[in-house]
Each structure stands twice: as structure tokens, then as C-alpha cells.
Length: 130
Image (cartoon, rainbow, N blue to C red):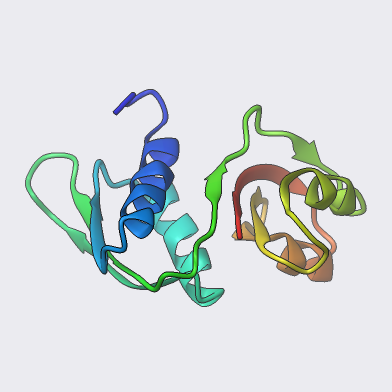
């Protein structure tokens, strides 16, 4: 674990556990941002339920894996994207049109690139999942 980027570590842990065919995995440390990214992934059916476990240290998430993640990772650098530029990054990070999601942080919160397009907001790219 690098601990330089807890979000990257969380996604790597999930991807590795998914590759091993595990049903659950534990991601630590927990953070609000990781929580928001997980709930976005959950809404899009990439993962099942997840739970914040308070271990009196940095906290951790227990995540139910659904076997739906082919690949996921953080996007570095965190590109700033205007509301009409998402397509360029979809082509760069996702394998096919309408396949997978980009998770962006916007002034209106963390959401998928599709929601950001609908709301007409830009933001910064955080994660790709497919």
C-alpha cells in the first residue's frame, strides 16, 4: 500500500479481490471521498452494499463485491473537465461508448459523468470503472 493515495489503494484492493473471485473486501483507511465514490459505484451496480467499520484508527470499509468490475482506477492527474468535454475523456478511459463510468467531483458533489452531463456541470475526474 502506498498510502500516498488512499483512493487509488482502495480501487486496487477492490480490483485485486474481484480478480481473485472474493465476495467481499476490506478497504482501509476510510475517507469521506472514498465513501462517496463507493456509493456512486453502488448506484451504478458495480458493487453491492458497503459498510463503514470504525476500528478506532482510520476506519475501514467492508465492501460486497458483485463481480461486475472489469477494471477500475484513479485518473491522475485529476483533469479539470468542462461540462461539454466529457466525451474526450470517455474515449480515453473507457473501452466503448456507454460502457463504464467516469466518476467526477463537481461543485454539486461526486457523481458519474452522465449525471454531470445531465446537470450541465463540469468538475475534476477522479475514477474510471467498467
